[in-house]
Image 1 (spheres, rainbow, N blue to C red):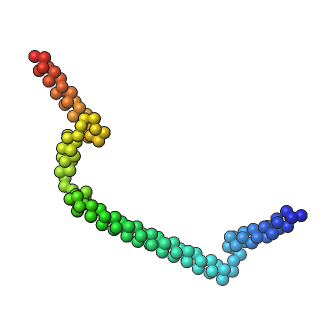
Image 2 (cartoon, rainbow, N blue to C red):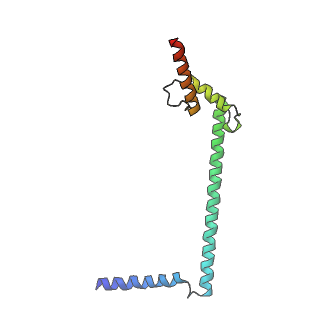
Image 3 (spheres, rainbow, N blue to C red):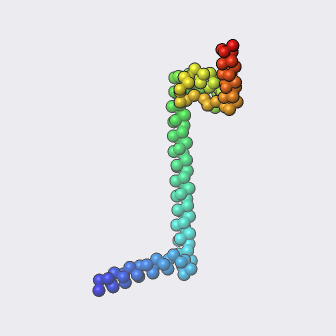
Length: 128
């Protein structure tokens, strides 16, 4: 008996929800009200997105201030302002690193070939 009563209560509520969701049987006032609610929802989403963008812009400005302070403290150049000579600086830095370093620059196939030829020439000269 309790199951029957529960089914009747839930069934009536579900049918009411189904009628609203269809939207064909709505009066002009209800359609206008739903349109107003949808408009308010879209405005709220737009406002929320603007706040999020402002928040991220503010955070990025704060980070840039911190980065600038660190660059000034250690006399570092900004990566965007770095000159085209940067690859040369990397090669110099890599040449000072040990051969077993995990951070060393990988050699191109041409460089490996030239090293192999140099090794053959030195081995020939040593034998003579």
